[in-house]
Amino acid sequence: MLESVERTTKPRPAWTILWLHGLGADGHDFASIVPELVQPDWPGIRFVFPHAPMRAVTINGGARMRAWYDISALSFDQRADEAGMRESIAEVDALIGRERDRGVPPQRLVLAGFSQGGAVALAAGLRREAGLAGIVSLSSYLPMAAQTITEITAAGRATPVFQGHGTQDPMVPLAAGQRSKAALEAMKVAVEWHSYPMGHSVCPEEVADLRRWLGMRFAGG
Image (cartoon, rainbow, N blue to C red):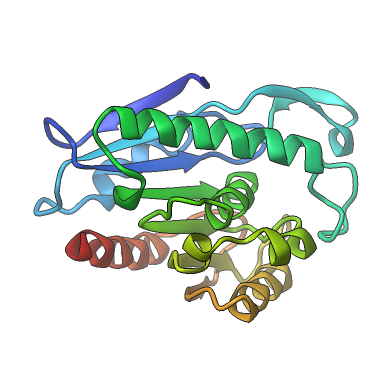
């Protein structure tokens, strides 16, 4: 089980937001977003921010860092190391299983991620047999798109997705996010898409849109 940073908004949380960080960061990277994101009238939420394993990253000269998968090519069709991606999907499934054992079923769990983490969130969430409350993918893209067409489950197809992206993103270009949105919609996934005048980051407007979207999930649960 991956080590994680945890933040709980109220005693006995009824919901979980499992948030995956980007390349080279760690679980502390988004922990500070909790007070900015959470509304006082929301149910109790456990935020889980796991640390990705340390691994060599080819495009960074083989340097070891926290990464959900290796990146050996700049092309987004070949960017994600499939073996590493599938290992991370299994790690995410284990974390979701732990939340179930702690009293939060998958139907009350939102899987979120930024950049590399957003790619894993999409890959893992769309392949779930037990559906999630939602998937959040920020400044990211759909990895293994061709495989996803055959591996997406009925529960994955029914899971709503929030996508946010910067129009000036130099790391994951806007076009990559837009292509991913089109691929998801072709698989009949309901996507709420937003773009913002920013780079590879998160802005207050995005947080506000995500807050509203999450509030809709909680209201329905």
